[in-house]
Image 1 (cartoon, rainbow, N blue to C red):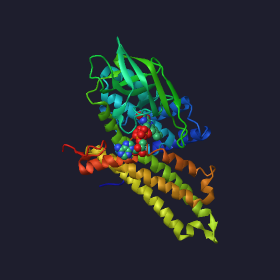
Image 2: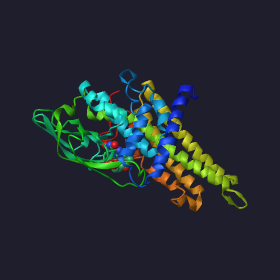
Image 3: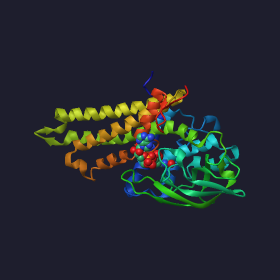
Image 4: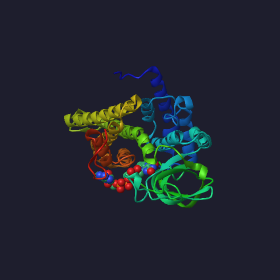
Length: 392
Ligand SMILES: Cc1cc2nc3c(=O)[nH]c(=O)nc-3n(C[C@H](O)[C@H](O)[C@H](O)COP(=O)(O)OP(=O)(O)OC[C@H]3O[C@@H](n4cnc5c(N)ncnc54)[C@H](O)[C@@H]3O)c2cc1C
C-alpha cells in the first residue's frame, strides 16, 4: 500500500490549489458572504474548473472524460473552496448521470455546454414530502402528444435557482405505461421554463440551494431518459462517490478551523505564557488533528474502494458519517480554543462550523448512512421495518 502521491498527482493537486488561490478564494471574498454568488460569477469559476477536467471525472477517458481515478478526484476536490465544491458535485454528478443513462442523441444535445461549464446542471429528487426515501416522489409525469407534462415541487436542490438544466425524478402517469414507476426527465429551462427560488440556510450561504415548482411544465418527449437502470439505482451509484466527497468537504472546513485555532494558540497569552504551552490546549489540538486525519483517510479509502470495483456502499456511507461527526466536533473544539473570539463573526471560525453543519443531510442523513452500513454488515434491510434478509 502506497500513501505517497505520484509526481503527476502532486502536479494535478497543485494546479487546482493555484486556481483556488488565484481565481476562487479572492472572488468569494469580494462578494457578499451571506448571499449566493451571482450566476455569471459562478459560471466563470465553473468554466475554469472544467478546463482542468473537474466536470468530467466520472466519464470514461475514451468518451472524453478527465481520465482520473475517484481517489485522484477526491484529492483535487478537497482543494476547491466549499460553496463552489458543493455546487460542483451537483453539476458534475448531473453530467455523470446523463452520460450513463442517456442515448447518444441526448448526450450530444445536453452534455457539451455542461462539460464546458458554460451551463449549470443539477438533479432534483427531494420533494416537500419525500426526502430519505426517494421512491416516495409525487411529481407527476403525464403525456400530451409528443410533450411530457410535469407537475410537482422539488426542494433542497443544489444549483436549482441558477440551473440551465435539471434531471427530475417523477411518477410515470402516462396512459399504457408502467404507471407508478419512478422515471427521469431532463428539463432544459430555456425551452421549458419553471420557477425556482433560493432557500436561506445556516451555512454555505454563498452556494445555491433552492426549490423549484413545475406547474404544467411542458417538456419534449425526446427528453425522457430511457435508461434500463431504474431511477433509484443510478442515484445509488452516484451516491457512492458523492458521500466520501462530502466527507472531504467537511475535512477541508475542519482543517481551516484547525489552522485558525493553531495560529491563535501560538500567539494568545494567558497565565504568563502562550496558550499553546498549556497541556490541555495541546491535547485539544491533537484531538482535532486526529479527527481530521482519520476522516480524510476514511474518505480516501472509500474512493479507492470505488476505484477497485469492490462493494463500496457501506464503506462510503461509513466514511461520510464518520467525517461529518468527527469534523463537526473538531470545528467545535477549534472554536473553543479561541475563547470568546471564537464566537465573533470577525474570526470567521463560526462560519466554518455552520458550513459543516450543512453536510450531514445531503446524499444520506447520518441515520440513513448507519442503516446502509448496517445492511452491508448484517445482510438485513432495516429501512422499511420489514427486517427482511437480503439475497446474498
Ligand atoms: C446542502 C444540501 C444539498 C442538497 N442537495 C440536493 C440535491 O441537489 N438534490 C436533491 O434531490 N436533494 C438535495 N438535498 C436534499 C437531501 O437529499 C434531503 O434533505 C435528504 O435526503 C433528507 O431528506 P429530508 O430532509 O426530507 O429528511 P427526512 O427524510 O424527512 O428525514 C428526517 C429525519 O428522519 C430520519 N430518518 C428518515 N428515515 C429514517 C429511517 N428509516 N430510520 C431512521 N431515521 C430516519 C432522518 O435521518 C432525519 O433525521 C440537499 C440537502 C442539503 C441540506
